[in-house]
Length: 447
Image 1: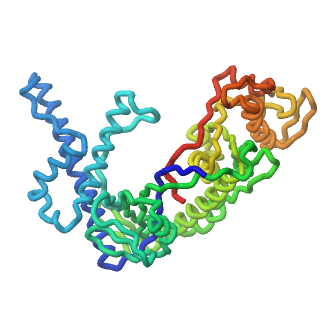
Image 2 (image 1 turned 45 degrees about the horizontal axis):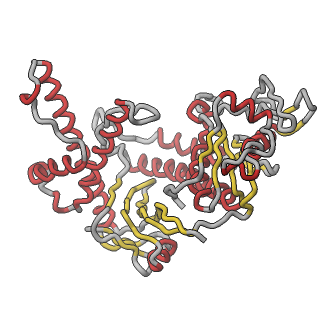
Image 3 (image 1 turned 120 degrees about the horizontal axis):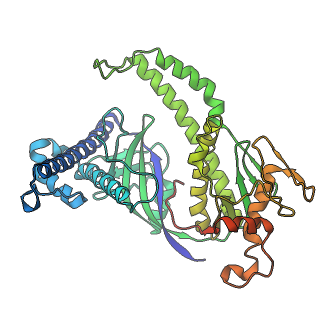
């Protein structure tokens, strides 16, 4: 059994004391302060140089440019911290490093996006972080970062040993056997609770799936979360729909309380804070239930089948359908594909991603005839050529399975010529754009 080194995350809920909670808040505030200070310095430097150029100043006469990378920002911070933050010694240096690193990364992403080096949606210039709209977080990379042997505490620099809400045995066992090494720890407050996420370098045993030679097509949808080519439907839990009644009631209550007002400086009332916590609790429960269902589905697929085939869905465009946007977002198609990507690699399988233009729903899985049109309301696929009558989602899942099986039979995956001809469905799709195979690779996991 082979071993692979992967980056994995272990996340634990914390139960800090009142003093420790204040220390965590102080460190998160220090990170936000350093971020805003560094961003202000960069903006002032850019504005000064732009103004000087407008007056005809150029070359060596311009104000010296302030470096955007982390070492340059750290040098500038160390030179000015005694004046701008005389309280800096109360916090770990990692708190300020967290904010400076955030500015360096944000500016690099903006510059790469502007120059075309970064693919995807355009990234805007970073903005300042407001205290009320920013999630408190701080990252520790040096110092005492330890999971205690009692499996009930974690130790962080300047904070000390913090009690955990749950057992840390999953990570403690690996640390004790020497198959894991902690690289960093990120503390973050979500929904009123503090969490600590350890980034760990783990030596994992790459196991084989239960059916290494089997291929399964997975058609993702709303009516059923997934339909497998084996004919097995995976029901859609629709966690958000189940919580909508309680969420509407809690949101209505929140709207009737006296909340904060930035224009007048009004502080929120205690009843508003209580109502806000109830809304947050409902949202958090829905998110946790959704994550649990998706983890169970993707783990089952990755540990059972050698090859899993999914579609390259354009989720951002699908969300423009306002009648289905809430249901599509609740299904989390992108998260399912992300988890399958690294879990198939961990279990010795591979993830095949069908081309976005592959007509999986419009193609007959029996004869390969492609229908010119197929509306969303048509849940039963009827082939006009061979007379096949089949569920629409099952037909799509079978086509996704054939997408790999009929093109790469046997040893064709290793470069040998196929012994069978590709299906008509594959021939139609490949004329539009070549198919791509994305093999599962090392990734970062939540579980």
